[in-house]
Image (tube, rainbow, N blue to C red; front, side, top):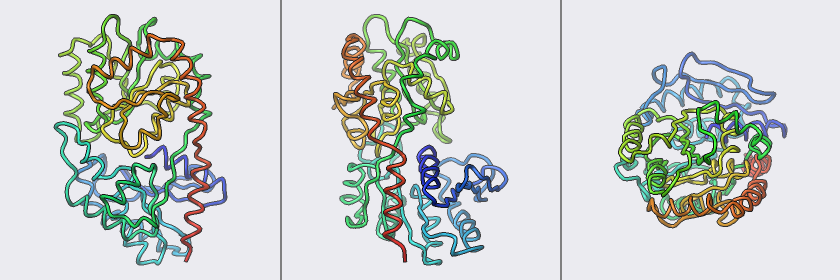
Length: 379
């Protein structure tokens, strides 16, 4: 979500829109000019440092008060408040109502969608979140969804008014994520100690049950013969550390420790290098409202394997940018992986068409679409 917000903000600013990005301060509150027209404000809400996701709700009032103070200094400054994620929505909707400012809501993930495809052992999203998302969907002047799968959930389960829902798919930085970075492949392997001579299969995402990294590990364990390297990018979110421990235990249980590398968190350049150096990217998430990693991999010329469910059916073009699988059986995923790695001609063809698929999505197009939505709401 941070990637999407920053990329969109920069494109909006390039089109003459002044953007304030507002987030909770993990340390001292601050205001930082990121680029001409884009300022990042960190606002006091709760204690310093990271806060587990399930504890954030108790600080939404504090955050809303910080937004109100910022907006109150110059109420005419804001023409639109656009909330991202349900917590930001419940924090800032009262500010928008008080100041008479149009309110736009993007959820990015929906409790109803997550609960429908809940990971084994994961806790369902609480009823309170589901009710708040329904409330926000009916109070917002516009709701921006990333995919038609999200729209279906919004209308059918969240009961959002269909005439207020807009679809704006995310974009991809096709200059940063590019096959040209394959020239750094040896340096990438050296940087993280990945052995030469074996293809890299990469999984990218927060370490948490929703992202389903255990499926990638089990699929690797089901492969016969010499295995590829599995690079797992990401770190546990606060409160999900136990799941990270479970992944390490599973690696030991399946005796694949020499094949799995936990790379940790990467900056954008590091991620672009690794995706370009990879033969395949796996997106084993239980649900995705879209699946930005799938686009970034495709832009890198690296085919993607994902589930035929939720928003992945739009971020992955089956047979063009990768494969969509209708099962979470590790044997099925292992067959998909070996089928592509064992067919270099097919893999090369998918690599070329994957890049073409990704180039249809841009942050500029997303920003232009948002400007149209904003303009339609002016009071």
